[in-house]
Structure formats: C-alpha cells, structure tokens
Length: 195
Image (cartoon, rainbow, N blue to C red; front, side, top):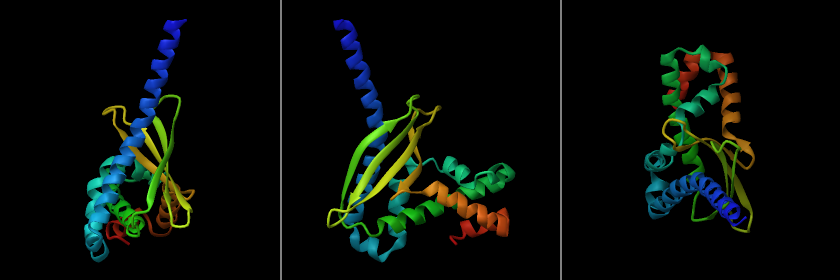
C-alpha cells in the first residue's frame, strides 16, 4: 500500500508540473513584457514601433503563428496556394503585433493574476487562466489556449479569449466575410498593408 501511495503522489506531482509548464511560459513572457513596458513608459507612449518591438521580442516567440493563421483562415486555408499561405502568415503576424500593441498600450502596472491551468486528457493541450485586476477591483479575464508541439515538445499559444471574446473566432469571421467580398488575394494584400 505504501508503494502504491508513493507512486500516486509522484504521478500527481508530475501532472502538476506538466500543468505548471504552460502557465510558466505565459507568465514568464507576460511578466517580462509588462516590466519592460513600465520601465519604458515614455517610449511606449511616444512610439508605436517601440511597443511593437517589445511584443515581437517577448510575446510572438511563444505563439504558433502558422497554426493560428491556418485556424483563422478556416476553410480558405486549403484553397490558398502555398505562396498565399506564406503571405497570409506574414500578414497575420503583423496583425497579431498590432492587436497586442493596442491591448498593452494602456498597461500602467495593474496586477496580473493566474488561476488554475487546465490540461486535456492527453496532456498536449492546456488552458491558462489569468486576469488583469483593474482599479476598483474589477478584472478582465484572459484565457490562453496552448498546445504541446509533437516535434519540439514545446508549448505554444494558439488562441486567447479576452473577456470571453475569442481571438480566433473573431478573426475567422472577419476573414471569411472579407474573402467572400474581396477575394483572398486582396484580403492578403490588405492584411500585409496593415489595413
């Protein structure tokens, strides 16, 4: 019985360590970015390029841009040529940087908290819950969805929900409408131009 109990404790400890890994990735990148924003508030306020460079250095490396772009394009991904797919990923990267820049520009040192990380049964998908606590005690809930890459074994973010609004769902609806109206080539051109 003692051996079984010891094995159970070790198994639960290892499951807890796996759950901590996605949270540590998100928290580490976010903490570093937020500290740099506060330390360089004048530059952040005066230059959109400076904040974009902070986001590109700190957040973009933990995001699977190709997977996110593919999911955002939805059924149109398989209809696109390989060059269109590559161009869409490049434009989508810029969109992510602009989106995160807009979200982080207003950061002034609010507390960021992290809740329990939930894992799927296969231990290859995780949801990291966090919240930005605003003055007056209200909070903005943020949920990061991650997956563990089979080849590299690294965790990557592929979606986020802010106050219940999913980025991928929003992007997919936007791109579907735009492609139906303008076609994929024009949609990609506008995306790459930052429109």
